Length: 195
Image: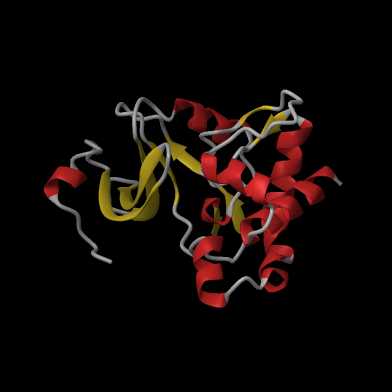
């Protein structure tokens, strides 16, 4: 993957302390880039992720990340910015989806203790009457220490008690099909968060 972007894309975030490095992925609510953030006047930098909204602002997602901040939730560093973007920690260990693509669907080996922070985070969300709305392998990342974090809180919503699922099309589809690895993982996390 290229380490530089065309000028048109680097100008998406007009901030002197942020430089977009490369595209990570696209989703329903935004496009995510790996970026470099200057953190002080001496030029110290850190790797971050910048999510640029498809439309509007990521204010709701930023509010949810602040509300549920903790070990199993990706860290929010800044946002929403003037263009509606948010700046979060970069999951340098990749996503669960990329791990499954390489290692295959060996959930027993992947889940274990690495998923405990997410289970705890989902349990806290549920105890406060909230649902994430899009728990799937593309929204679970790994920190450099191997611990898992949940991100993409754009569809987080209050639990209204409805038996119908809320969330993205892929999340709702996976709930209805209940046949793919995504479903097993989501069900595992939901079950353990209820315990």
